[in-house]
Image (cartoon, rainbow, N blue to C red; front, side, top):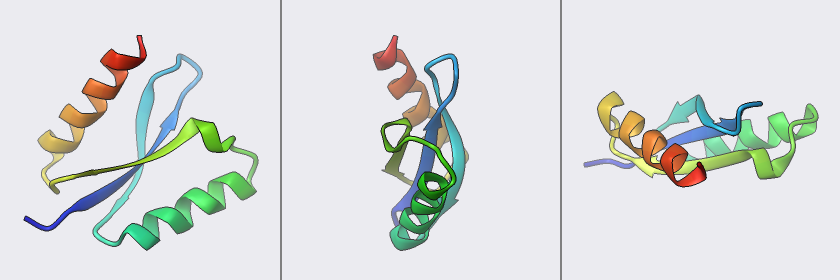
Amino acid sequence: MKPYFTLLEKNDDGLWTIEFGAYDKEDCKSELDDRVDHDVRRRNLKIITTGAKQAEIDAAVAKLNRETR
């Protein structure tokens, strides 16, 4: 299984939301840097690694959001 990288951003409710995804981690890092350059705080951004299936990504985000609350 090839790893898939997803950029998450914390919304106003304190929950993580999917913003961008790619098989290349550098693409996600570039997107993260671009958002920081446009006034998104670094602490409100996170890159996670999962499989590429949407269900895997959704489960990882749901787990992070459960841990956040």
